[in-house]
Length: 174
Length: 93
Image (cartoon, rainbow over all chains, first blue to last red; front, side, top):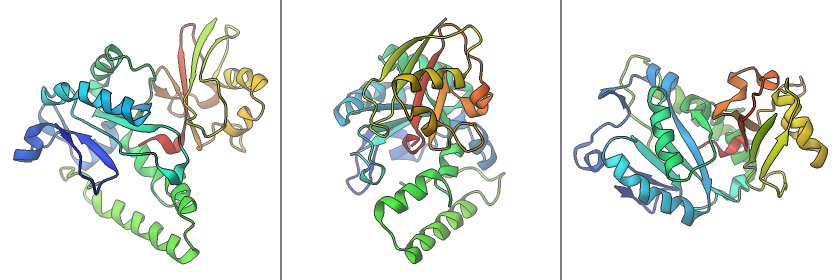
């Protein structure tokens, strides 16, 4: 099911059961991942394209998400102006044990860019000193005090989310 | 040997050409490949390298889908038919 909440920068493709019954798609063989497992194994194939291209791909991926062959997908609603990129980014999520099966689906749908990234790598880029957070701060033109507040918030959020490595990972609200 | 390169720089370096088929020496590494691309796109190697000669954190180089930093960084050996993708790190979701 394609979930388009106007207040979010991202548009999601998630199973209908996730919306109706809070089904947790961050799993491996039906078992939800702990924070530790999430950081070690959860990741995504990255796909780039114009908004209409990623939108078309999202529609084609939707049935695979409902069949649970692909856990979830998200893509940019629009270009991120702070990053000055000229393409939208789509993330096709899965556990690293199933990434080859997911890649076969993407390749069959015409995706040619093969780029796998662990969520841990992305989260690190959003920590103080990470390329994404620093570029975002720069792009917004934040003053020193505001920038430091943003960095402190990022650090605190990450610490809170992963405080107990054995807890079931509960997701990131975006 | 032939290596297919896809530069998904998304406007960041201003390089127009996005797909390259490069003929590299048999013992080519990621560093060799970056050097070859730099011959036609001056500044490419400098942008992709950090001060220690490793891959810059500003970009991600994937060899057959795997991040080269998790392989052998600049020294990652390439094989005939490999596909290399380069993206700006900020495009990583």
